[in-house]
Length: 253
Image 1: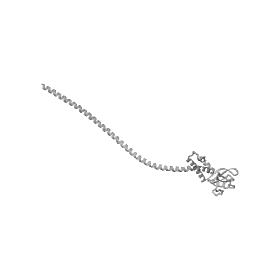
Image 2: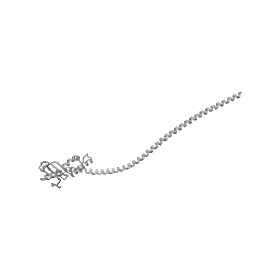
Image 3: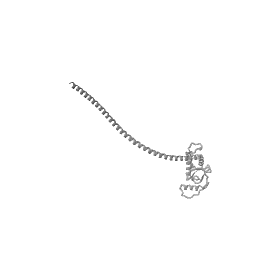
Image 4: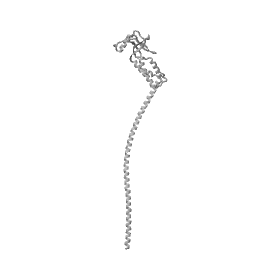
């Protein structure tokens, strides 16, 4: 009886021990499984994050490669442009030096040119002077002390000479008041042969003569008996008479 009791106590102790060991192993296994699941989740997330980062890095690499190609092309274009710009700059510099040298020559003689033009203006016929009065007014009174730029001064001179050359190449007819040797003033028609000479005659053909540039302006001597021929000359010029040779007096300097 006593032996059976001991056996049961020993068996109960063994079963308790086995139960406790099983319970411990189950909890340990559960912990291991939890850790494994967590590890798988972390690994899966890391793989997903890496694939995303890999895609971003790949797109970034393509973008940077494209930008690098564009920059290389732009750099080559800039090199070509810089070469062309250097050539243009050299040409412009040379042109600037030429203009500076020419300007220096003009600037050194502009005062004398303006003085000479003022003397020439006095010998020009009245119709031409009336035409270029705006340019004459712009000539500086004192060439050595003027606010006009070199370009403006040259433009004035060129304008006056250009108009004078145009007048000299044509015939010009005007109506004018002419003072005769007697002091009498009559209305006449005047035909200018450029800047060389002119003919004038009144409506009746009574008063007539020639004109030519003098030292202090044009001189208008009267020529007795020349009225009919000069009147006929103006009629041919105006077209009221057919073209023909007309003998008129002349003066050769």
